[in-house]
Length: 196
Image (cartoon, rainbow, N blue to C red):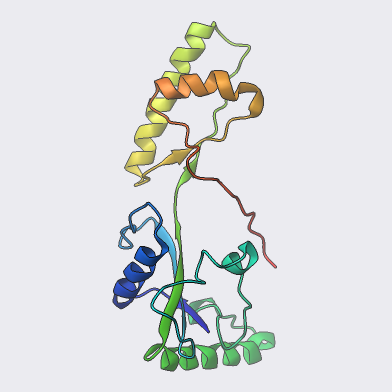
């Protein structure tokens, strides 16, 4: 198996996989610069049936989220390679891996892809000891509009807020008045990233 950067020539295969999954959302525009990570999984030795079974629906959560990383399958691009003497051997292995990967791309089958799109998480700090409730609402409106404009100017398309349980119901109604909507249709999951 090979994990590599997405190329525009992969789009038709990914459209077919997306359609076969049958999920009720449109395939996103992968030219959008908010997609920071665009990775494709391919293998020249995998024969698939006419469907894409096993890609998502048949996989366990662990299989869907994690794959074994081998030196010949995935590694950082050359621009991330270390220049220290201690890492020379690793750099040679990674360069050989990249060359081998490029050779395999020509006649391999795309099995899946992972895309990460930049979004934003909202945090609000508003002193509950200052002013009246009406004044605090006005301050919230001013911050909300300024933050909305700044996020749009920076190219963001959405902002998410996770409300602490003690204020979720009451403050959620206020957010709804400002155009936010509670989204219970999809189940959110989170992963914490760390260097291994």
